[in-house]
Image 1 (cartoon, rainbow, N blue to C red):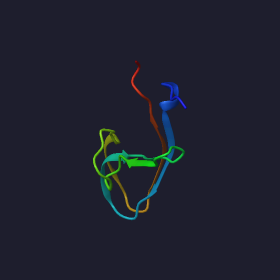
Image 2 (image 1 turned 90 degrees about the vertical axis):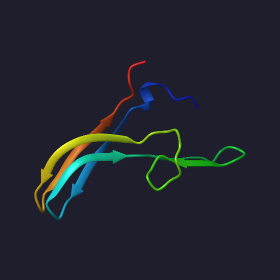
Image 3 (image 1 turned 120 degrees about the vertical axis):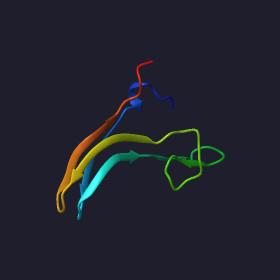
Image 4 (image 1 turned 180 degrees about the horizontal axis):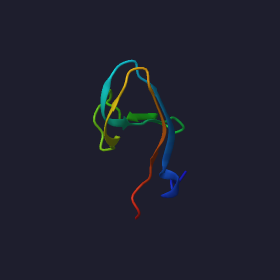
Amino acid sequence: MTVSHASSSLAGPLTNALGSWLDIHAFLAWFDISFECTHKKVKFSTGPHAQYTHWKSVHWVLSFCVLPDLQILGKLYSTPPTP
């Protein structure tokens, strides 16, 4: 399988119900990946719970306040830089 530049874009829904007053500074996203169809299974993660890799997490820097009992709804997009 070959990954193309176009297929490396990401998009996903964002829904977060918050129960208290918060200052939000950023959203973070990471991925876990597993290659299990090879002779040696390989798994790694870019998340904060995993060992460091050269792969990077994605962060969207923000600055806003959320009032209690409000919900954040939206969609996050991430596209690779133009080659």
